[in-house]
Image (cartoon, rainbow, N blue to C red; front, side, top):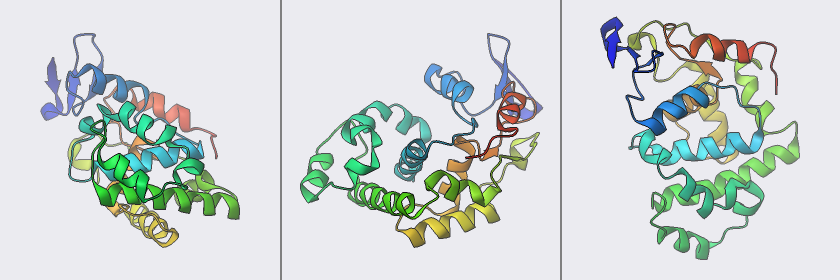
Length: 209
């Protein structure tokens, strides 16, 4: 693997230039190529990603990604309607589950988030429009050419995090929320030299939740 632009764009053995961060880990590369930065408008999927980003706090995303199947099993497919009914017995069950990150505050946060998600859905127009309204319904194109141009938090992520906290979500600080926004395509932070930059930009054209 060769690097360009100070190690920020990596040219892989398949000839594709990619952002630096997935390295050569096959799971991470697949995530970079097929998920990260793709606009997501499904309310349930947005809940799952937000909760997983909360579990990531203090850890690397690849750590969560390697356990994602375990999380999905333990949290019943991240169906908020089911998680909202979890009890303290479920918290204890999850604390004994080696397939996930066993953090009591984060587990309880997932349950609180499910209940907040239901309230937002019931109040209308729904969780996806609630989130996408913060970026006016379409992905923010940063056109970053270097790692130094990529923010760790923004005014938008601060506003979204504050609104989520007010609704009952936890682990939704501006840095976590910005990482979430990058992952679900609310912000296209693929570097301009990455083969996914233009593709993700095109996916966001004319799309609204």
